[in-house]
Length: 326
Image 1 (cartoon, one colour):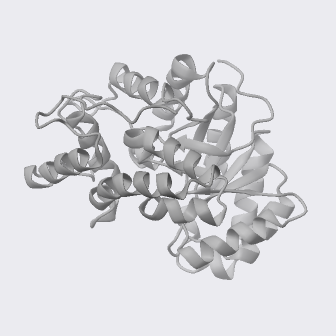
Image 2: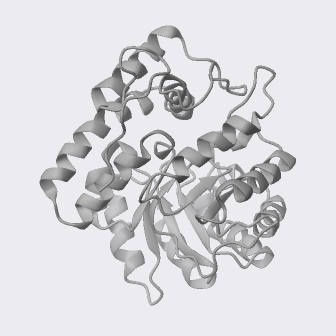
């Protein structure tokens, strides 16, 4: 066990890494760590998220999530802050995950909305969401990032504001909202007496989101294109619109294949991309209910990697040069 980075403020470029599994659907810890180390070595990455959607946390036991934190802390925890996902339908289980994450060296928590808040609860019983966040905060002193969904589990803005005012541990949101709502979140949460950072997860229109004033990005696509995320973030920060457009044009090819229908296969596709790029030993294995992609879709991913300039040079497993660090 190791301590996380003290007084960490969630901001900047934060990739969410994937999990590698073997043919028997068990964790391949060596490959998981190799992937983690590759992403963490990208110049300009500010933190790493584990135990999130990207790592198929929905299909991982508490014991596996604990080991993911331990392995990640051992591999990169002395170099970068680690953000641990808190994914649970029950608040008491969420609190247990939060305690574990702090004990294993996390620097912040990414708090998913429980599916139990669905069927109208999140809108008509806002106190349920507030109590969920307070239960997590009571279990850990770590900074919290509220995952703001774009579906029926999206917290109304007044609920988000109430959470931020009543739970001092909340320092940021990871915002998946559509453009107009996203802009309103940035303006409102930045204007609170205690500023709350807004991290974009709108990977399909990332340049626009950053230009709106987002404080960074937290995205599973960073498991594949962390260097492009860094370069885009820097270009927007420096008001270099021409460079930002060039990088966004490269990113476009990846988002067209990662985030097409069915949307739930996004991280499945990213894992196939890592195999194509030689960054993960294949074949790509996902846990049910996810299923293996067909060859036609894998070929489309390969073509997109080539079009983005990080492709496979016509041969699977042969990585092209990444975007040069600035």
